Image (cartoon, rainbow, N blue to C red):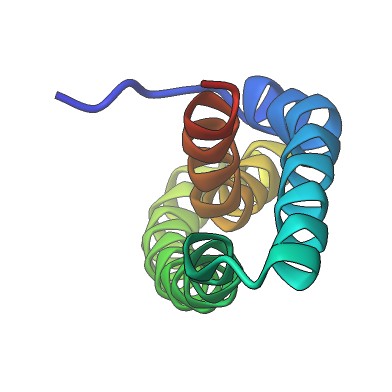
Length: 112
């Protein structure tokens, strides 16, 4: 079962863990350039494919969130209880979540 993180914890993961992942990957690419190691080239390839997958997942998640919020907005308008700020936060969280998930996984994997 997947852990669910809040929007705040996702932003914190991106703020603190993303630079560590970038540094580890930069070091791996530098070593690959000097030694010609194929395992470090795999990391560079993984970096690109993960970014493409995260972008695709983010687009799908934001579209789903927009549809949900649109349906919720129609119901909220009917009852007169509309909270636009909360809807914006849920949409923003849907955009950030795929990136934060991958950053956390990469930080754990590269720290070993």
